[in-house]
Image (cartoon, rainbow, N blue to C red; front, side, top):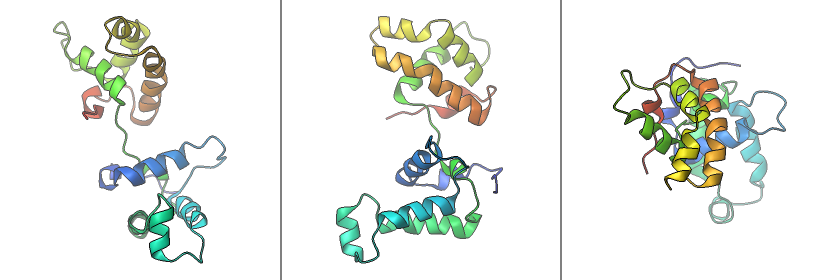
Length: 166
């Protein structure tokens, strides 16, 4: 399996990124998921006897995702890890938490993912719930999400680089 040293996720559509993420993060998968594995998964969803028009109407998977995945396989090889092609951004609730830390006028340095994790452990989520900026269930997801981002990018990654504005 090939692990790509550059951020190729910026070249992947949001729909394909979501599909790759769901396959790569499947708890039932006992091996790292590759692009070829995701391609086989998609092929299994689309019966051979369906014509192209039926595929487009009956499945959320359409030919453009297959074409995009095939192009990635051609360029990066089928053994490339699917997770490398997933666009990672902070969720909207985590982006709000990051914004609060970034806006702290007492900070000397831009906050890293590790800084955000520390703030969450120190009660940032509960404070945001109290201020009405987050729902209770959103607060519960901050720590697992920041831990996943730290695992992928490292705790010294600037948190602002992963902000999502919608």
